[in-house]
Image 1 (tube, rainbow, N blue to C red):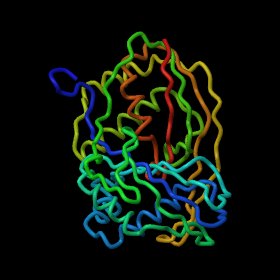
Image 2 (image 1 turned 180 degrees about the horizontal axis):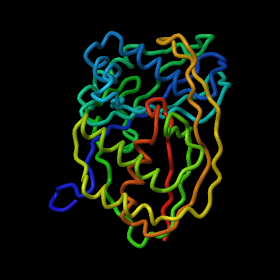
Image 3 (image 1 turned 180 degrees about the vertical axis):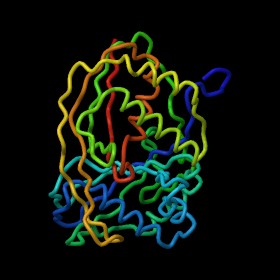
Image 4 (image 1 turned 90 degrees about the vertical axis):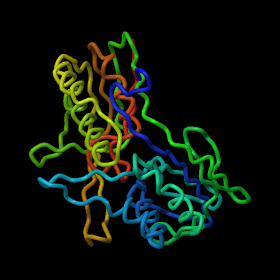
Length: 294
């Protein structure tokens, strides 16, 4: 920032860590993004204002483009079997104006207290809600500290002298072109996805993005070279109760490395590590990790 004004972009977010305790042996879907989406929606049913803004805000915009949701679910790593006493932890990240409903979401989870998860409806007890970045408890038995509900702002930190980076796709990345899932990525496609996501989120939920910088960086991205790629398609489906059909969540996993004048892109890559990329980010898809190297 210069004189407290954003240079690249600005977007507030609230990272919540939800800790549940397994109350009985449970076999769950290996990837829990859709399952956790369902239990959060169930918890919010009696909190109509928050439910309407967080869960029902996604409508078709003018021109037929999807409006991004103001939250992201980060499910735990792939795991099917939980035993009594095991912990299940996941993140919920509220974005932009959705932060004003943070207390309603937290109170909805506290009121629910426990959740039945999976096809066999196994019970998991709520143990703690934390502000993830600060590692501060917001709620646990005997404690409620609403002052710990503190927003973060996307970092604009730029790593100077960066000429190499590695990008790892941690959950299926779904980017479509002409209706088909991309099975290979170049740097310009990745940056286009990052800039589009930040632009759409700030337009809908408040914040700022430097569109002139995006135009310049789109040109510069053409000169970033891919030096290695180990991507593969992970086939994955989920059942949508609302739509009463299976939905394809297949996407790319693996890692790539790039080389070039990467310093101007580092704030955007760091932002993508929080915001995810591509489609179905609400369910945890498109989570990446970017390792910046000189």
